[in-house]
Image (cartoon, rainbow, N blue to C red; front, side, top):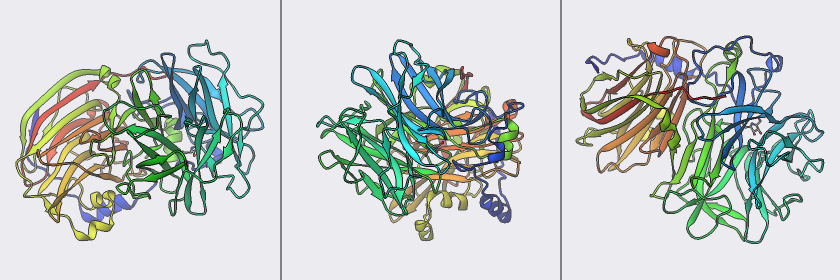
Amino acid sequence: MELHNKFLWALPVFMLSFLISYNGVEASHNVYLHYQSLSAIKVEQVHRTGYHFQPKKHWINDPNGPMYYNGVYHLFYQYNPKGAVWGNIVWAHSVSTDLINWTPLEPAIFPSKPFDKYGCWSGSATVLPGNKPVILYTGIVDKNNTQVQNYAVPANLSDPYLRKWVKPDNNPLIVSEAGVNKTAFRDPTTAWLGRDGEWRILMGGRRKDTGIAFLYKSRDFMKWKKAANPIHQSAGTGNWECPDFYPVAKSGTNGLDTSVLGQNVKHALKVSLDATRFEYYTLGKYYPAEDRYVPDNTSPDNWKGLRYDYGNFYASKSFFDPSKNRRVLWGWANESDAAKDDIKKGWAGIQLIPRTITLDPIGKQLLQWPVKELDTLRGAHVRLSNQLLKKGDLVGVTGITPAQADVEVTFSFRSLDLAEPFDPKWKKLDAQDVCSKRGSFVQGGLGPFGLVTLATEDLQEYTPVFFRIFKDAGKHVVLMCSDATRSSLKKELYRPSFAGFVDVDLTDKKLSLRSLIDHSVVESFGAGGKTCISSRVYPTKAVSDKAHLYAFNNGTEAITVETLDAWSMKTAKVN
Ligand code: DQQ
C-alpha cells in the first residue's frame, strides 16, 4: 500500500462550473439517421468492459424479456445490428447458466410483419402455466411511430436455448383505443394472474404531461381489454416508458413470482421517465379488486422519487428467478460518450450487473446487490484492515488490477460531531446538485471519504465515489456521490456529479461501499445497496494497467478503513 499525505485536489471554481454545466448527454432515442446503418469498421477495445454485458459491437439499449427457463437464463435486448447509434432495432438474444457468462444467439425478434415493420421495441416475457414462455413486445407499424402490442412464442420448446421465435398472424394483440396517444403506448410488462383468473399487464404512456401505466386484462392471453382506469398515473411526470410492477416480501429475502398477492407483500411500481432519462419507483399497496395501486406516503410519486440508481441507468426490467427464489433486476447503462465517439469506437451501451432486489427491513425502499454468481470472477485479492485515514490521506490499493476490480469497504468514525450543517438553501436541491457544490475536493468535517477509482497517479483523471455527512435539525443527512467531473481529460463527455441520499442509521458510526470497476463503468452500492450509482466514464490516461485505486479522506474527522477487500476481476465470457 502506498500512502500520499498531501491531498491537493483544489480546482478553481470557474473550471468546476464549466465542467458541471457541460451536458452532452446522449438520451435514449436521439436519432442520427445518417449513422444508423454505418457498420463499425473497427471496434476500439480500450474502454470495453471485462465483465459487464456487451455484444461484440454496435449499439445496445433496454434489457428485454429476461427470464429463467429450464435451467437457462435468457437476456434479450434492444440492439442495432447495423451501427453504433440507436436504430434498426431488433431483439438480440443471449443465454447463460450463471447470469455472468453469456453465449450469443441470432436475434430472436426482428421487423418482418405489418405489425412490427418499423420496429420491435421493448417488452417482457411471461412463463404461462404448462411451462410455456411467451413474449409481449411493442411493434411499430408505420412511419408515424404508431405503437401496438404483439406476442411471440418459441418455435420449438424442446430447443434448450429457444433460438427461434414465431410471431403468429393474429398479431397485434392490442392496439390503442381512441383518445390514447398512439406514439406513447408501449413496453408491456410481465403478466400477472389475478385470483379471478384474469391475466394483467401494464403499458407505459402519457396524457399531456401525466405519466400513465395503462392496465389491460385477459382470460386467455389473446383477447385483451383495457381496464376502466389505469393502474396508476402521476401528473407532471411526462411519458412513462418501461413500467415494471411486482410484489416484494415484507419479511425475508426471497423474491416473489409476479403473480403473488396477499397481506405479506408490498408492491413496487417502477417507471422510466422519457423526459429526464431517469427512473423512479414507489412502494405501495395494490388493490386487486379495484385494480388500483396506491403508493405509500413514504414514496414520493414524481421525478423526485426513489431511484434504483442515481447514475447512468435506464429502461430496467426485473424477473423472478424460481431456481434461486430471487427477483433479479437488469438495467441498461447508457453512454456518457458523444455519439460521434460511439461511432468511432464502434459500440455504445452496456448492461449493468444483474442485481438481486429485496425490501429494506425499514420497509421504505428496496435494497439491491450484485447477484452472488459475480463472486466467481474474483481473482487476486488484497485486504486493508484498520487503516486510519487522516484529513488529506490518500491510500493506494495495489496488488490487484484497478481497471477491472470489485472492492468492498467498511468505513467507521469515532464521532458525528464534526458533520457540517446542511445548508437550508439546499433543501430545494436534489442530491446531484448538492454533490456538485461539494465535490470530493472540497474539504469537509465528516467526509468526504470513500474510494478514488480509475485514477492516474497524479490525479489528472479520477472518479471518486464517496460519502459526506451533514447535520440537519438534529438528524444526519448522508450524501453519496459518484463524481465524473474529473474522470477524463477528454472534452466532449457527459460528466455529472451523480449522487443520492442514503437513508441509513448511523448509530454504529459505520458506512459501507462496494464498487464494481470495469474500464468505462463504476457501479457502486452504498450501505448494503440502499443507494446505488453507476457512472460511465472514459478516462484517457487512467486506462488498463495505468489505472489506480485509492481510499481517501478529505474531512477533518479521521476515518478508519475497518476492512477493505479488493479483487482483480477475471474477464467473463460475454458474447
Ligand atoms: N426504448 C425502446 C422503447 C422504450 C425505450 C426502443 C426506452 O420501447 O420505451 O428502443 O429506452
